[in-house]
Length: 179
Ligand code: 5GP
Image (cartoon, rainbow, N blue to C red; front, top):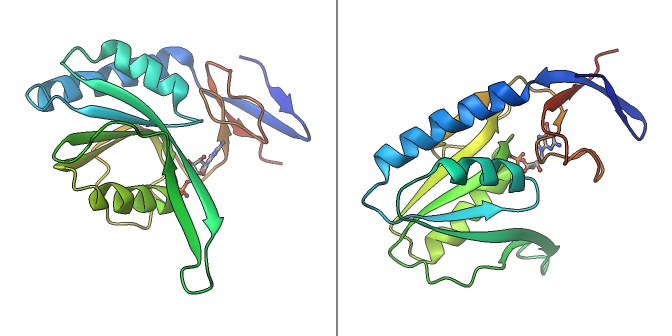
Protein backbone atom coordinates (compact mmCIF):
# COMPACT_ATOMS: atom_id res chain seq x y z
CA UNK A 1 0.00 0.00 0.00
CA UNK A 2 1.40 3.34 -1.07
CA UNK A 3 0.63 6.80 0.23
CA UNK A 4 -2.08 8.46 -1.82
CA UNK A 5 -2.69 12.11 -2.60
CA UNK A 6 -6.25 13.29 -3.08
CA UNK A 7 -6.44 16.94 -4.10
CA UNK A 8 -4.43 18.85 -1.50
CA UNK A 9 -4.10 16.08 1.11
CA UNK A 10 -1.89 13.05 1.61
CA UNK A 11 -3.22 9.87 3.14
CA UNK A 12 -1.22 6.96 4.52
CA UNK A 13 -2.14 3.25 4.63
CA UNK A 14 -4.27 2.36 7.63
CA UNK A 15 -6.39 -0.80 7.30
CA UNK A 16 -5.58 -3.48 4.73
CA UNK A 17 -8.16 -5.10 2.52
CA UNK A 18 -7.56 -8.47 4.23
CA UNK A 19 -8.27 -7.02 7.67
CA UNK A 20 -11.38 -5.27 6.39
CA UNK A 21 -12.78 -8.44 4.85
CA UNK A 22 -11.99 -10.51 7.93
CA UNK A 23 -13.94 -8.16 10.20
CA UNK A 24 -16.82 -7.93 7.70
CA UNK A 25 -17.07 -11.73 7.73
CA UNK A 26 -17.19 -11.78 11.53
CA UNK A 27 -19.98 -9.23 11.49
CA UNK A 28 -21.98 -11.21 8.94
CA UNK A 29 -21.66 -14.32 11.12
CA UNK A 30 -23.17 -12.47 14.08
CA UNK A 31 -25.98 -11.06 11.96
CA UNK A 32 -26.72 -14.52 10.52
CA UNK A 33 -26.99 -15.90 14.04
CA UNK A 34 -28.97 -13.01 15.55
CA UNK A 35 -31.51 -12.25 12.84
CA UNK A 36 -32.17 -15.63 11.21
CA UNK A 37 -35.88 -15.54 12.03
CA UNK A 38 -36.52 -11.83 11.44
CA UNK A 39 -36.47 -11.49 7.64
CA UNK A 40 -34.61 -8.18 8.08
CA UNK A 41 -34.60 -5.34 5.61
CA UNK A 42 -31.07 -4.02 5.18
CA UNK A 43 -31.21 -0.30 4.55
CA UNK A 44 -27.94 0.77 2.95
CA UNK A 45 -27.19 4.45 3.47
CA UNK A 46 -25.59 5.82 0.30
CA UNK A 47 -23.11 6.91 -0.89
CA UNK A 48 -20.34 5.80 1.44
CA UNK A 49 -21.72 2.38 2.42
CA UNK A 50 -21.88 0.83 -1.01
CA UNK A 51 -18.62 -1.13 -0.79
CA UNK A 52 -19.10 -2.31 2.79
CA UNK A 53 -22.70 -3.29 2.04
CA UNK A 54 -21.66 -5.36 -0.98
CA UNK A 55 -19.03 -7.27 1.01
CA UNK A 56 -21.26 -7.71 4.07
CA UNK A 57 -24.34 -8.85 2.21
CA UNK A 58 -22.40 -11.45 0.19
CA UNK A 59 -21.73 -13.10 3.57
CA UNK A 60 -25.25 -12.70 4.95
CA UNK A 61 -26.97 -15.98 4.22
CA UNK A 62 -30.30 -15.56 6.04
CA UNK A 63 -33.52 -14.59 4.22
CA UNK A 64 -33.52 -10.80 3.86
CA UNK A 65 -34.31 -7.84 1.66
CA UNK A 66 -31.97 -5.02 0.70
CA UNK A 67 -32.81 -1.44 -0.14
CA UNK A 68 -30.83 1.77 -0.62
CA UNK A 69 -31.53 5.23 0.72
CA UNK A 70 -29.96 8.64 0.72
CA UNK A 71 -30.35 11.28 3.37
CA UNK A 72 -30.94 14.84 2.26
CA UNK A 73 -30.84 17.86 4.53
CA UNK A 74 -32.49 21.15 3.78
CA UNK A 75 -33.40 24.21 5.78
CA UNK A 76 -37.05 24.24 6.75
CA UNK A 77 -38.82 27.17 8.32
CA UNK A 78 -37.08 28.98 11.14
CA UNK A 79 -39.13 26.98 13.63
CA UNK A 80 -38.02 23.62 12.29
CA UNK A 81 -34.37 24.36 11.49
CA UNK A 82 -32.60 21.72 9.42
CA UNK A 83 -34.89 18.97 8.20
CA UNK A 84 -33.56 15.59 7.19
CA UNK A 85 -35.40 13.57 4.61
CA UNK A 86 -35.00 9.94 3.59
CA UNK A 87 -34.98 9.47 -0.19
CA UNK A 88 -35.45 6.23 -2.09
CA UNK A 89 -37.35 4.01 0.32
CA UNK A 90 -40.14 2.20 -1.52
CA UNK A 91 -40.64 -0.78 0.80
CA UNK A 92 -43.32 -0.90 3.50
CA UNK A 93 -41.26 -1.03 6.69
CA UNK A 94 -43.95 -0.92 9.36
CA UNK A 95 -43.47 -3.81 11.78
CA UNK A 96 -40.17 -4.92 10.25
CA UNK A 97 -36.68 -5.42 11.55
CA UNK A 98 -34.55 -2.83 9.78
CA UNK A 99 -30.76 -3.06 9.74
CA UNK A 100 -29.21 0.32 8.96
CA UNK A 101 -25.94 -0.22 7.07
CA UNK A 102 -23.53 2.69 7.56
CA UNK A 103 -19.94 3.22 6.45
CA UNK A 104 -18.92 5.19 9.52
CA UNK A 105 -20.51 6.55 12.68
CA UNK A 106 -18.72 9.63 13.91
CA UNK A 107 -20.76 11.99 16.13
CA UNK A 108 -23.90 9.93 15.53
CA UNK A 109 -25.93 12.94 14.36
CA UNK A 110 -26.76 11.27 11.04
CA UNK A 111 -27.72 8.03 12.74
CA UNK A 112 -29.96 9.78 15.23
CA UNK A 113 -31.82 11.61 12.47
CA UNK A 114 -32.32 8.41 10.54
CA UNK A 115 -33.46 6.60 13.65
CA UNK A 116 -36.14 9.26 14.25
CA UNK A 117 -37.38 8.91 10.66
CA UNK A 118 -37.56 5.12 10.93
CA UNK A 119 -39.27 5.19 14.30
CA UNK A 120 -41.99 7.41 12.82
CA UNK A 121 -42.62 4.67 10.28
CA UNK A 122 -43.34 2.24 13.13
CA UNK A 123 -40.64 -0.31 12.43
CA UNK A 124 -40.49 -3.29 14.80
CA UNK A 125 -36.84 -2.76 15.67
CA UNK A 126 -33.80 -0.93 14.35
CA UNK A 127 -30.40 -2.57 14.30
CA UNK A 128 -27.31 -0.65 13.27
CA UNK A 129 -24.34 -2.11 11.40
CA UNK A 130 -21.43 0.22 10.75
CA UNK A 131 -18.04 -0.68 9.41
CA UNK A 132 -16.25 2.05 11.36
CA UNK A 133 -17.06 3.71 14.66
CA UNK A 134 -15.23 6.62 16.29
CA UNK A 135 -16.02 6.03 19.99
CA UNK A 136 -14.33 9.28 21.10
CA UNK A 137 -16.63 11.30 18.84
CA UNK A 138 -19.85 9.34 19.35
CA UNK A 139 -22.16 11.36 21.58
CA UNK A 140 -25.53 9.68 21.05
CA UNK A 141 -27.32 6.95 22.94
CA UNK A 142 -28.58 4.86 20.03
CA UNK A 143 -27.14 1.36 20.25
CA UNK A 144 -24.65 0.54 17.52
CA UNK A 145 -25.21 -3.21 17.36
CA UNK A 146 -22.55 -4.32 14.87
CA UNK A 147 -19.19 -2.57 14.52
CA UNK A 148 -16.46 -3.68 12.12
CA UNK A 149 -13.68 -1.63 13.69
CA UNK A 150 -13.29 1.17 16.18
CA UNK A 151 -10.89 3.93 15.17
CA UNK A 152 -9.59 7.11 16.82
CA UNK A 153 -10.92 10.52 15.90
CA UNK A 154 -8.97 10.76 12.62
CA UNK A 155 -10.16 11.39 9.06
CA UNK A 156 -10.10 8.29 6.87
CA UNK A 157 -10.80 7.58 3.20
CA UNK A 158 -11.24 4.54 0.99
CA UNK A 159 -13.56 1.54 1.10
CA UNK A 160 -16.46 3.79 0.10
CA UNK A 161 -15.40 6.83 2.11
CA UNK A 162 -14.39 9.95 0.20
CA UNK A 163 -12.43 13.13 0.53
CA UNK A 164 -14.24 15.75 -1.53
CA UNK A 165 -15.67 13.09 -3.81
CA UNK A 166 -12.41 11.19 -4.31
CA UNK A 167 -11.05 7.95 -2.88
CA UNK A 168 -14.26 5.94 -2.58
CA UNK A 169 -13.01 3.27 -4.98
CA UNK A 170 -9.93 2.29 -2.96
CA UNK A 171 -10.22 -1.17 -1.41
CA UNK A 172 -8.05 -0.27 1.57
CA UNK A 173 -8.61 2.42 4.19
CA UNK A 174 -6.17 5.33 4.45
CA UNK A 175 -5.79 7.96 7.15
CA UNK A 176 -4.88 11.61 6.78
CA UNK A 177 -1.13 12.03 7.21
CA UNK A 178 -0.14 13.73 10.48
CA UNK A 179 2.24 16.60 9.82
P1 5GP B 1 -21.85 11.64 11.94
O1 5GP B 1 -20.98 12.67 12.59
O2 5GP B 1 -23.22 12.19 11.67
O3 5GP B 1 -21.89 10.34 12.72
O4 5GP B 1 -21.16 11.28 10.56
C1 5GP B 1 -21.67 11.84 9.40
C2 5GP B 1 -20.92 11.50 8.15
O5 5GP B 1 -19.65 12.13 8.19
C3 5GP B 1 -20.59 10.05 7.86
O6 5GP B 1 -21.66 9.32 7.31
C4 5GP B 1 -19.49 10.24 6.83
O7 5GP B 1 -20.05 10.49 5.55
C5 5GP B 1 -18.79 11.49 7.33
N1 5GP B 1 -17.56 11.13 8.06
C6 5GP B 1 -17.35 11.08 9.39
N2 5GP B 1 -16.09 10.73 9.68
C7 5GP B 1 -15.48 10.55 8.46
C8 5GP B 1 -14.15 10.16 8.08
O8 5GP B 1 -13.24 9.90 8.88
N3 5GP B 1 -13.90 10.10 6.73
C9 5GP B 1 -14.85 10.36 5.77
N4 5GP B 1 -14.49 10.25 4.50
N5 5GP B 1 -16.11 10.72 6.11
C10 5GP B 1 -16.42 10.80 7.44
